[in-house]
Amino acid sequence: MNRNFGIASGVIAVGIVALALAAPPAPLADHVYKVNGADTLDVTYTSTLMGSATRTVHASFKKPNMARIESPEKVITADGTTMTVYNKADNSFMKQEQSAANLAKAFDSIDLQVWQVFFDENALNQLTNVRAAGNITRGGQQLKVVEAMQGRNAIKLFLDRSNVLRQAEIIDNSGTRPVSTLINVTGVSTEAQFGADAFAFTAPAGAKEIDINAFTGEWILEDLPKAIEMSKATGKIIMIDAMASWCGPCKLMDAQAFHHPKFAEIAKDFVLLKIDADIDKAFARKYSIEAFPSVIFVNKEGKEVHRFVGYSSPEQVFGEMKTALSKG
Image (tube, rainbow, N blue to C red; front, side, top):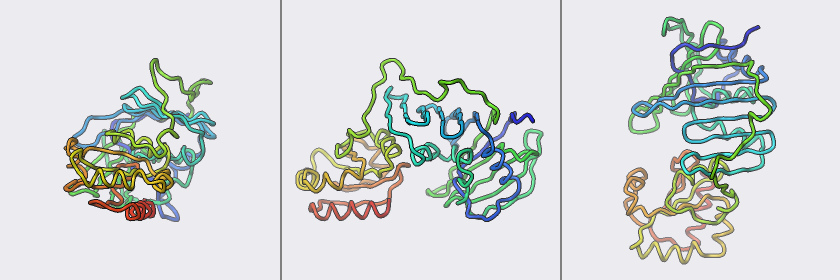
C-alpha cells in the first residue's frame, strides 16, 4: 500500500505533547497508529507565527532512534549514539551522548511534538479536553476537526479522509493577548528511503565545537539564545543575573555570593547567564526589569519560573536557587 501522503494547502499542526484521554477520537488515534507503525518518516512543513515570517522545517526519522531536524535556525542530528545541535547563526555545534531523554527534547517546539508519536505512541497522552468537532472544507478538501487543549493553548487539528493529519492552528493564550501559529504540511512520507549517512553530522567549514561541559559553573555573557540552547541540550534551567555595570549591590552580591565556594556546587544544576540589563533594553522590557540586581530563572522556552530582586546574602541566594529548582 502506498503510504506517501501528498499534502494540500493548509496548516498543520501542533502544539501537542499529550492527551490525558483514555481513547482519543478515531481520526487522531488513526494518525498516531499510522505514524507510530512506520519504520521511517519524512516531513516538510511551514510554521507561521502570526505577525512573523514563515519558517520551513524538514524532519526525517528512522526506527529505532535516528533523527534529523533542520529549521532556519539550527540542525539537530541523532545517529543512534550521538546527538549534535548545530546553530546556523554563529556556525557552532554541540555534541552529547544520545539518550531517549535528550532525543525527546528534540521535539520540544510546538510544531514538532505531533510527530513525536513516531518514536513514542504515548507522546500525545497529556492533551486535555480532546474531542471530535465535525468536518470542515478547506482548499477543496474535506477535513475532520479535532479540538484539544495543552495548558492554556487551544489547538485545532485537521485530518483528511484517511485520518492523516494535514493542518492545525494553535492559539497561545498564556500572554496578555492570544497569539496564533499556523502550520502547513507540504509533504509527508512513511516510506522514505534514507542513505547510510542521512543522520550523520558533518561540520560545515569553519564551524566551532562548543563543549557542553565547559559552561558548568561558568557564566555565559550577554547571549540569551545561547543560554536557551544550552538549557535545551542539558535540561537545566537558566539563572540570569540581570545587573548594571554601575550597580554597587550587583557587584557586592557577585563578589560575596557568586564567588562563594558553595555557589559552584549549586550552580552546576543551572545554565548561568549574566546580562547588563541597563544596556540591553529589549531584554529589560521582555522580563520587566525595574531594579538591580534582578535574578531571574527561566526554563528552556525562556519562560520565567522564579525571580528575586535586590541584594541578597550568599545563604539567601542559595535558598532562592533551590526554590527555583523546585519550580523548574
